[in-house]
Image (cartoon, rainbow, N blue to C red):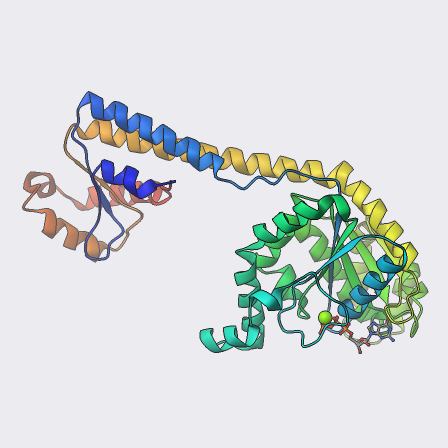
Length: 398
Ligand SMILES: Nc1nc2c(ncn2[C@@H]2O[C@H](COP(=O)(O)OP(=O)(O)OP(=O)(O)O)[C@@H](O)[C@H]2O)c(=O)[nH]1
Ligand SMILES: [Mg+2]
């Protein structure tokens, strides 16, 4: 969309003095108004058609593996790859951890081939976490190409396995994580596999904080979540199932823990009771390979659930967002049209939210020669009204 050339046509000039104001000189003739209406309509159509629309497919199922640092995500992913290969299931592997040194599996798409995390740290003067986050942000800007690659192979694939960075919050609470998750979820059935370090979670307080994090991921991503209690070769996960089914059992375990968090965690167990009902939990061992069949069954059931419940919710949210953007765009176009018609051949000043009075004063001084009369009656009261108008025009966008 060539916005610049269309705007040039209407003699749009950027404001001086580094201000973000624009001046639109309208010639005020009926023909030009028609031309303006025409062009704005074109802009409107093109803008609304510019959103990338990948058609939705029922296959492959995307499995995004998340979990606290060191819980065994990468080892688990390796085990999943081995299982798919042994069972003649067709998997595709994506590594989104830019900081990992070596991978035990061969990734089909690896973020490290695109972004060099150490270079990012150097160039942007960042620490390790900032480097990982920025690398993921950079990669997210091209994520539609990744989706395209998967779409091209969709017919041959059953699962896409996604490994995420060690620091869970970098993926679950970052804009890029949300962009990547949403890009997947709007094109394929997508399930989050939350890997839990079972031996570590055997302490009631740690179990509670792990579950709270799982809960926050569920509500943030709004995708089906499978709990994979990993490292069951070291500690069985039965205790966790019991605590999730019966909050009194958890409270009894909590009472034996004399930590200051005990009472708090007991209250939380009541709150989380409802959350546990929406989860599928399996015990797995990335090292021994136990629980793989149960895990894939849980994934299949979650993918079904995704199609029945989550997909329609996602479609609804997307339609609402589109409608809101469309409304906003129409409103802005209408305002621009009105302003240009009202100007009757005079200059129309469109401000993009400049609130600095000092800069406003500068502008007034500069324009005094041109429109002396207009600014002679400029009062404080009008200034207040102008600010309100600035708010509205501030959200003007093509
Ligand atoms: N006993 C046992 N150890 C495991 C299992 N899964 C992973 N580990 C060990 O846990 C440690 C961390 O494993 P990783 O796979 O690197 O964990 P990760 O979550 O990918 O780590 P980051 O990406 O750095 O957060 C390694 O020493 C693994 O050998 C398991 O099922 N059983
Ligand atoms: Mg890892």
